[in-house]
Image (tube, rainbow over all chains, first blue to last red; front, side, top):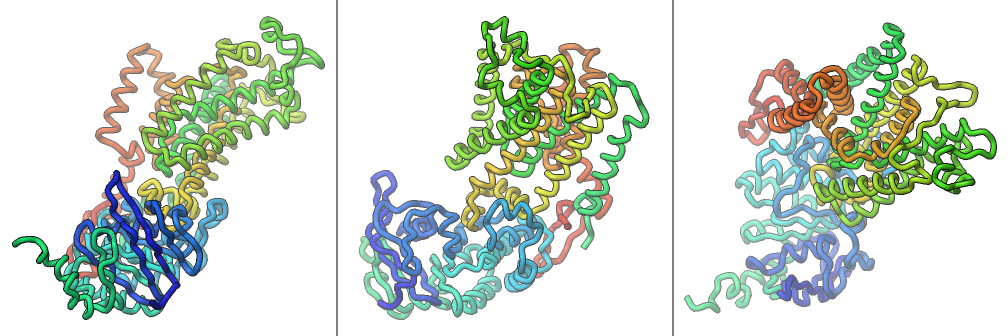
Length: 249
Length: 370
């Protein structure tokens, strides 16, 4: 297995005696886009929660660049360079699009220093660049709560980009987007993965086919299969899980 | 893009300058000592409303126990003033009645005026830092935090009544003389005292406004919306919450000091739960999202209470409560919200703008411009 850049080792997580993640390991190489797929309840979002610090694993380790980041606080993990986009788009609804992007530009996180700073250095340029990339230049002064669903998704992608993390965790970034919007997202992601490592949770295999370097299939909280999209699509066990041939039909 | 007048920064500052210009000019028009003292006390209420606007309006931290900092500040200041009037080696008379024969340790530092004033600001702020730190790292928020502040406030009220030998219990402390700063005496019934309080009110409001406009302020407004999201952007939310809470406590402590100077009296009434809740009502009526409108809220309610409320006696509380209900129901942004809506309508009739994706987006008066 290549990598060692980002590594999950045998993580486990139970909710109320129910084992949701059961000894899952993952290796992600630098500058690749790895898709995490699996049926509902396979533990995809929980895995993202465990990486980003929203949940603490019961057992196992998470490493970034050789650093053990297991069970650290959300803000610490974020500062290590892991940015996250939520499944239900989480933008700051009461703030304008511009303010959302400004908050996300979190180069300086020290509260006291931020008290004496009116504008972050380099923020304006980055904001221009990102707002063009996510096509929100004309919506900068609009309250984020008034955006359409697709725009909200992009704003959150924009926020993660403003953060400029080494690893992007994207939880269903194209949910609810139109065909056009998905096309654009594919374009952005394919450009991004040249310089960033991306772990993406997705249901839609059509979308996965267009972007994934490596596909990892999760089932019942454990690894089921991993490989290129062609390998995965041929895999008998994956087909069984997805099409339910094991069940009597 | 059309701009809403209300959100133009330059206009906001001009408005602040004009408002403070008018308030500061009062002693030039009137030399009625009683009126000036009363208006200066309103200035103290204004500071309290500003402090609530900072932590509740900007940071979404509903603080129903602002009396903690106000009371602690006022007590420390009254103790300092009391000690200024004590001759060498004498102790305040009430202590003699309570069986003390020497100055307790608690009172020792207040023999020195500078130390006393520093403590008046430092004690409440430190308490807020510790209390806020414990609450916010445990992610206590919303109504739970409000209840904690209320409970703590009640505890303070009880403690200050119970520690009678040190605080003179329910009677409180009434220093016989006014505060001396070096060679200057601050006579509470003078234009000097008015300007002294006014200067501090301007200082607090401008500082709070600058904080709101800083990156710190932006992050604080962001965490009011969604603390979880802000955490995932790398900010330690608890630190931001604790600091904004402590800063609002510092402003309330300054207000407490001014109150003691102006009234030459402090009692457990400063820790009264009803009083702390009325601070929240002032800010809500005026508009908690705007510092200066929260201040106007304090002036309006307290002014009305003094000049109209007397005629209604106890009915006044009912009128106040009813108007609070009306504002919460029909004007969630307070007077400020009303002004914002009106200015928004004036500046820009509702329009539809074409979004970049080709969808028609409705963007009415809520569109904000910097």
